[in-house]
Length: 212
Image (cartoon, rainbow, N blue to C red):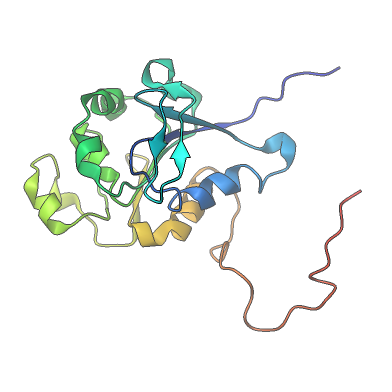
């Protein structure tokens, strides 16, 4: 008998100036790196169902708006970095949408990279949370919603107590690996490292055939 395959779900926030490159290893791993019946569902959400330009000028449109989201349906909420986080952080719709996460019991893993922890800080989600971020020091000093005493000067950091992973943008590979580990995947630390350099590939290794 046929039936609906229940896949796990990830939620990705969409906003103007978002960085695709900082999250694509993670979303790629959750989808096409998995057997087809185990591929995760990636939902995208934005304040409006309009087209947003990424930092490298790709045009993306969310499939859902904030009112359609139930956070409890997701295993992870992914926050891409933002080339200019100021106008995004000033959007009251986004901050109001995120604020319930601050007091939510058994919330999903929160994974925020580059400048996106600014959204978590302004919405209160980072209160009492140890975090890192790809933000200028002047930005951290400018706003009192940043608790600078909680900043960890590392490329990535996981606050186990609050189930929040943050990373600086250049650590996008580690961001993907650590997120996957926290979601229960067995994944090596050298994943996504590119072609091996210790020895040449044989012709057979670079000949690909469809599986039967």
